[in-house]
Length: 336
Image (cartoon, rainbow, N blue to C red; front, side, top):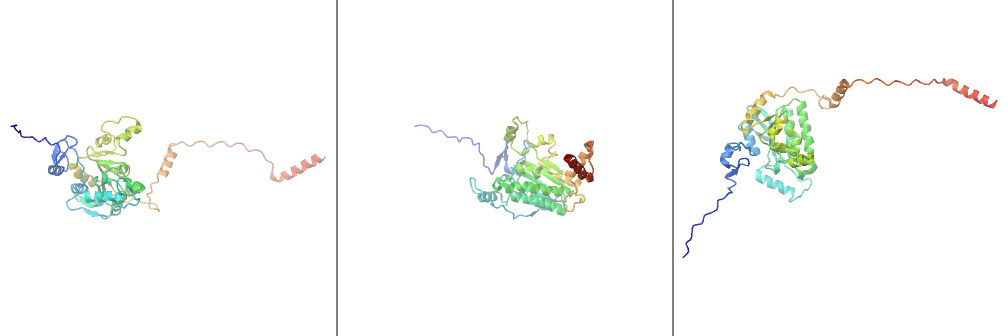
């Protein structure tokens, strides 16, 4: 009679997604509850995981100080866009998964007692893509900061403009930049915080226009992907290209700040970046600074004056009254 040996189950490499998370940097298995207590930063290697908008707001602002504004804004399918599934279905799925209306949340809050206008993006909502709603919330946050003279803080986490909204999404680049220019002209400070990732149209518009640009460690920051950039210039990219530390070394980012030190860093900046007195504006509401006039005056001072061209000597002409008489004399001489 054959002997039955006990069977041994193979070791499972997969862990329940709701219990454990594998660190992509050091491959350490992290217990999710412990990871949340450490603000989703790996205690072994310091890798910064992505944060939801709700967790980001709780990390930055004073307790129970955040007051959400424009919570009801929601994207519409103006183009009737359909790829693998209709755009409204994608919106509904993202709203169900995140509990958000769109990829950004805005409102007012206090940070160490300083009242600010705050806008936070969430990458979990369709990759943090910027559509009409995100652009509108960023613009309204800047306009409220201008009206109430509050420092503006925007936390970016995005893959770029939302392709399902086409040109409507691309128009948000110009709209947000115009709002931030009015803020700059009025002397109201703007602090930009770039988390992983900050790319595409968001990078090309408001994410890099801050008076102070702060990045989290090892965050992916750039316009086009590394493969696209390497193919465009036909060269091998340097190590760490488009990462926070690389951009800091090349002067593109002002500070690289760890997540747990971020709130204290912003509080220190708010003590120095106080909204100044409003600068005078022209009759049309624009700033008195005229870039064309500035360049013209600069050219007048740098470029030497060229000598005036010499005028050619004028031909001697007969007086107008003598012309008919001369013609009559010629006719008489011809008859004779």
